[in-house]
Length: 384
Picture 1 (cartoon, rainbow, N blue to C red):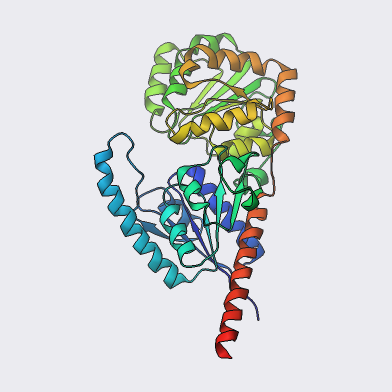
Picture 2 (picture 1 turned 90 degrees about the vertical axis):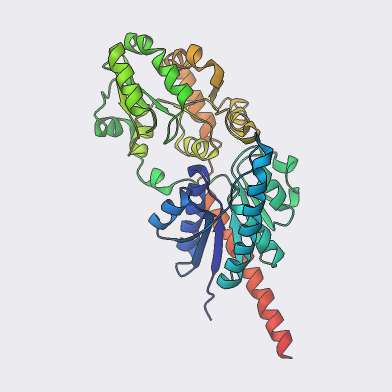
């Protein structure tokens, strides 16, 4: 008789959690097309839109993260956690999964905690080089922990760890093109080098201000093309300010890069925040990158992500506080240094894990198989 797999995937809050979660779910579906997959996320967060768009069912929990600046506001958070755990228990009981996957973010806490309590095997996927609080707590009861960086024994029991890398958007790999084709597709000059500057879909104020402070330097370096994704929050402001300064002809300003595969293929150098998902994509595509870690993340994990690459000469680091003085200057120096670019590309590519989603999906299905066998044995024993 053919097995009917039922898997819960939980987590979210940001694209950095949602894209890996969807990649894992897609890989499970490729291996087991009839598998039933249910997502559990945080109500009113972006996963409630992105997951259904990808063709999966999702249930939202009224969960919220702790307010570290105002502790008195956490009474409400504690109530939301309690309510979310009760909801998670009912979801698990109704859906009857054979395994539960957590990709990080506070949404995964109640679901995986209740799953483990109800004897459902759990797998957590830690994307960063510095483990988050939720995953550290959940790891005590987890059966398997899939990580993207070496040395994670600092945070998790070593016997549970498997180095898989981070799952990335398969569309990026499928849509890759060579640099010349990508430049032509984006209307760029194929003879001039290209620097792609991204600060996330919403943008990064410090990176944007760093570009604004160096419009003159960009204008002077006409042999380099710059694609600047300001983010939707800052686009109109940056466009107006750049026009007032006299927009350089070698600077393309956009709120959002719709075809990121082409943009990454076209770029000789990328400037980016140091989110785990982005770093994994750069590694798989072998992109030379300058990382500007966000200072506004828990436990400063983006800086730790960046330094894991810098220590292997696989990326360049610019501190957020030094962006105005250093970023554009370093980008110009680096993109003009062919030897440095080649070295960065070679070293970051060594860190790529192209089969991450498939490996994690395999582990999830193995946990589900073990659970099904255990349940079958119990049923047989009860019939005796």
